[in-house]
Image (cartoon, rainbow, N blue to C red; front, side, top):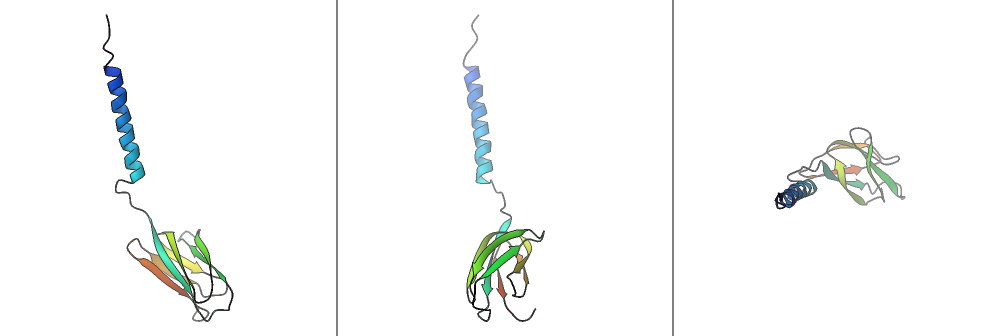
Length: 114
């Protein structure tokens, strides 16, 4: 007796659709929350006239971002972990800031007030 061949292809199609939908939701985020934020760092104009390697450290102490900035210049960092961060640059005063997903944190690195 012959088996109906229609069932297997329908199962494969249904399985493929379910897997495809799951993959699409995973890639699209489906309401997933990005746990990173933004911070801008300005190097004081009073700093020595040379570039500074500005480093942003997460609360864990791990380097999150870095960029070279000249005195009077501002660097914008994206993808910074949310929460308390520490910003350092050579002989400039270390600063702390809180990065949130709703606004851009701002920090100015200076040579005085440490």
